[in-house]
Length: 431
Ligand SMILES: Nc1nc2c(ncn2[C@@H]2O[C@H](COP(=O)(O)OP(=O)(O)OP(=O)(O)O)[C@@H](O)[C@H]2O)c(=O)[nH]1
Ligand SMILES: [Mg+2]
Image (tube, rainbow, N blue to C red; front, top):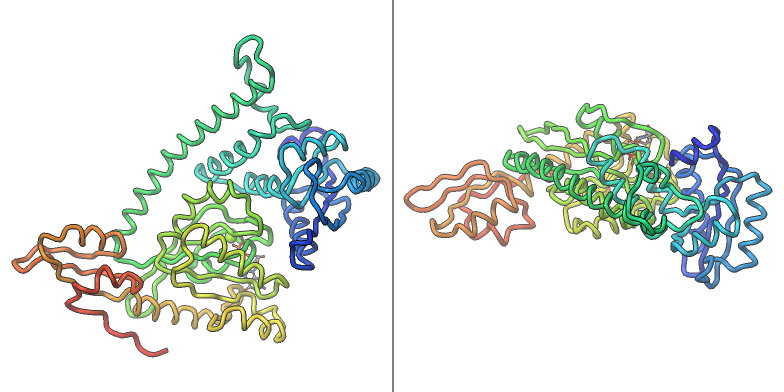
C-alpha cells in the first residue's frame, strides 16, 4: 500500500469497522475485528479507533444502513482517521459509495490481506502471485475515488483518442493481468520440474500447514535446523521452504513450511497461491500446527481444514500438533483436547514434545510408506504410470516374469498397488 504512506510521508490512521451479522455465531464479529486489528497493524497503519456494528439486513448501497454509515463516518473523522477499514467484503459499488460519502480511503478486509501479502512477498513467484490477485481485485474497482493505479497511469499514452481514462485504465490492468499470468506460467514450469525431480527421490514428503502465526516456521526450524524467518506477525512466510529431516531407521522426509491461512482469505489469493500450495497437495502427509494459546484455536482448526478442502488436500493423513505448550495453562490444554483427539502437544520454541512428534512421523512413514516390492505384468504400462503418480519408485527392472518395482506407496492408494505386491513393508514397531 505504498501510496497510503508516501503521500504525506507519515503513517496514516485507520478507523476499523467490525461487523456482527445475524448469521454469524455470537462473538465472531468481535474476534474477526481483533484479527483485523493485527492485520492492519502488520500493514503499518496506526489504529485511530474501532467500532463493532450489528448488522441485521445488509443493504446494497453501503452494506450498512444509511444512518449507521453517517454515524461511523463522523466517528472516524473525529478520531482523525485517513482510512476506514471495513471487516466485510465490499462490492466495488459499495466501496465507491463509502469513499464518495466519507471523502476518505475505504478498504475492506480482503484488500488489507492482499496488501499484507504484497508487503511480505519476496520471491519472484510470490510477488507475481500476489500481484495477480491484487490486479484482479482492482479491475472492477477502477472507478473508485481513491486508487492504486498511479503507477500504471504514469506510463504514458496508452490507448487511442476519445478513450476515457477509465477505459484506458481497464485496458492497462487487463494487459498487466495477461502478462502476470504468462510470467507465472514460466515460473511454475520451473517449480514443476523441481518437484518432479524431488518425487523421483525415494523420500516421503510432509507439509506443515496451519493458521498464520501458529508457529509453522518455528517448527520447521526446530525439526530440521532450517533458518526460516520466525516473527510475531501475520503472514511472515509466503514462500514454501523445504528441508530434509532425518528420522530413525534411516528414513528421511522432506518437510515444507507453507503460507499461513486466515479466515476469509480472499478467494483470489487462494487461487493465486494454489501453485505454491501444491507442496501441500503433493505431500504424503500433513502436520497441522495450532497455537493452543490463541482463544480462537477452535475456529482456526476449522478454517485450516476448510482451506485444505478447497485445495483438495483434506483426505490426507494429518498429524495435528498443538504448539506453544510452554506458555499455555493446564485449563487451556484440557479444553483443546476434544478438538483433535490423538493430537500431539509440543513447543517448537523449547523443543518439548518434539521427540514424540518425530517418533510419530517415523512410525507413520514406516506404516504408510514402507519399502514395498511389486511385480507388474509386462504389458501393464497403465499400472506403472499410476504407480509413478501415487508413490515413490526407487527401482524398476524388466525381467522374464514381468516388471519388478521397488518403492514406497501410501496405504490410501492400496487399490492401485496392492494387487501386485510381492513383498509388503514390515509392520512398524509399536509406539
Ligand atoms: N512461546 C512460544 N512461542 C512460539 C512457539 N512457536 C512459535 N512461537 C512464536 O510464535 C510466533 C509465530 O511463529 P512463526 O513460526 O513465525 O509462525 P508461522 O506459523 O510460521 O506464521 P506465518 O508464517 O506468519 O503464517 C513467533 O513470535 C514465534 O516466536 C512456541 O512453541 N512457544
Ligand atoms: Mg511462517
